[in-house]
Image (cartoon, rainbow over all chains, first blue to last red; front, side, top):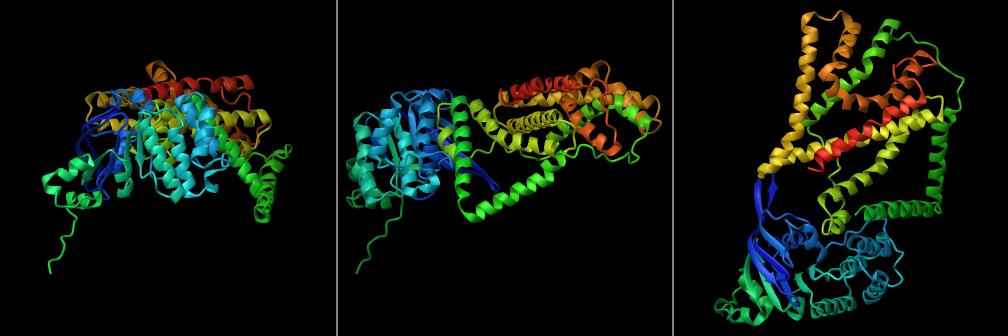
Length: 252
Length: 299
């Protein structure tokens, strides 16, 4: 199993005490699968992705990437994953090409020049190689972050709101990029508020609310669940029902 | 990771300089640069050439007090450093060495690198600021040679780097002291126990020296402190601190020269007479810095 999460929990310490962001979360993602992670704001999606990326340490439970525990064997686990965060924070004084070279150094990427050229073309960044982040739009910075994630052969891809800031053409290209990586055998976990994107590209969906998993399955499985059968056929209707935010239609 | 770290630092520095130079095409930045350069020249570099002008003695300490300082100063400074080191555990402060930028978090935290490598990277990045900070005192003090300025720069850099490593180590150890992991707590207690023992050894030795007879003035106190901490167990305990304090001799010397109008200071501080002695004094700082790094970061 490419991603294996068992009883994962993460708490934050604040001035008023300990706040649980994610509680007892367990799921798995296989190679070639695209799992959509959705939930309202504060559901714990970004915390989960950041913990899977090795940025946050789990307070409890285990996270394994291709069988390597992220806490016990972090180097091997991290070698296999790529994280594309929602906010494109780049090094202020590194150019686009230097960001990609940095990734190549960190991950010892083979055939870097060819991969880099192809990826810059795929993401419409050709001609921007020598630009600094301040000279790029937000959408372009987002593409640089995605290029840095895809320039190496990671078996596990984590996307946090990958379409934020992209133009319509960029969104279409990104959808194609995500599905093509899954066809090549990558396990993909994708968090997004754009439910139509999730419905279109994901093979399975996981809904989180207040730090807990409240639904997990393929669209057909979710639609077939007894309590969701009457919610409607779209992911949006299912999502609103599961999270308790659906508004009952007014009776005349 | 070392290569990646150097790559980030090197490329960022080069691109930053390029961006600053490109900005000079705009008149407001060009005027600002000219004014800044003129200020730097007249306030620092122009003063360097005024070799002949020396102030006369302004009174200052007597020959006897100087004699006392000569014998007791290095040990006393070492003792003061030990006290400052101990205070570091009690006072709340942050070295800033554990503050990573958003880009570093985004690119380096998910990368296959160890926590130790991340800290080394952060430490290397902080070196740019420390290096600049080290050059300033060397430019400001009145000195007779470029070598002296270089020595002061190196000394300040070593001391600031060591202080930064130590402050980070204290921050890490403090966090570990409250950890739920028993092994982490034990590891964190190690430096605290070592430091506590060192303080106790020196305190007992000083107490014995002063309990027998109260000191006869400040000079006697300095001499007695110098005698106590230069012998036996306190000497061994204080060695790292004295080694760390030794490079400060140049700065101290520079201030005394300025104040007393003394030109030949070669014999003022025993063991700190010539150029080679001063350079030698820098060498012990390196193992002290390395020991701190291993003790805290490597744990």
